[in-house]
Image (cartoon, rainbow, N blue to C red; front, side):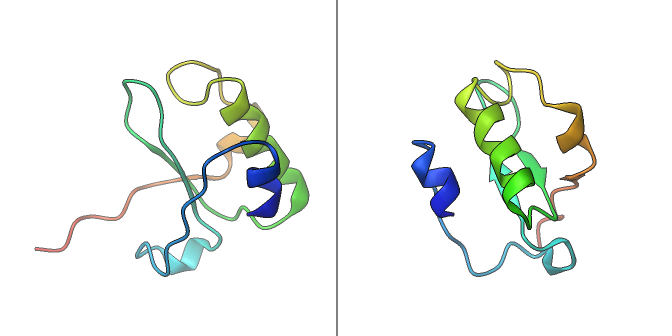
Length: 80
């Protein structure tokens, strides 16, 4: 979290996003597109890649780095 905030990004912490098997989960909101869910963002390198992508414009404005594609997960289905 500190690494993302240091990059000037707004960060909101949640206890549970219903995808615990993919911890740590980062949801990146974009511009005119659906949010992108990333799982397994556990180390400084992947966190730095997220920060760089978002700083460059994020979803809808900047191309996702290939190295982040392996972190993309499906959003959980809404409970009925």
